[in-house]
Length: 268
Image (cartoon, rainbow, N blue to C red; front, side):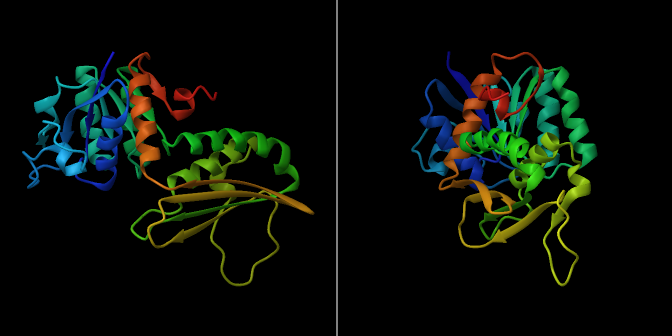
């Protein structure tokens, strides 16, 4: 069965990657692509915009106009836009793959309310390798955390506006959940000046921004006499796009609920 996919934010960096990933994947078809309301790109060909050749899919700025043309929507936009799209998709029974970040607690609660109506996949990172790292971190935390200091270092391109990254925060959450800690209480975001000795139960975060780094994450378990490092390096955003497209096809076989990439990859 061919999965008909709509991509929102089609004019953005990630939107173009999602279009490319959809075109390259087996048994998927791009049938709708959306840009922000009033965009001068409305009417242009989505494939030409993404650099994959003409697809015959015209860019539109109103999801309601194309709601009957797709089975799954992949949304890497803004919290406000994603919530608006979710409300419409819930009314029409369309599954959603969501890579949008920066939701407030209130916005996230509003989004999650739709899980009773449609399948939702919400993940901090759609890379297969990163999600494998999440699983490896559970094992490392169980074995190493009691005797180790834990530090998370992440690097991204100069244009990334949030820090630490959502992936780094999720790595911290995985470790905290595995070890029975509350990340909000034990997280340390950067250090400066003179401080007391490091508390063993804290989880440190360090952020690097510069150049065109797609995404690098390293979690260090630093014990006396040895250390274990779990690292993931993304060389292309296509890794995230491929995972999101994979999630879209998988969601179509699932009942309404909230899922993440651990579910998609059968890592739970």
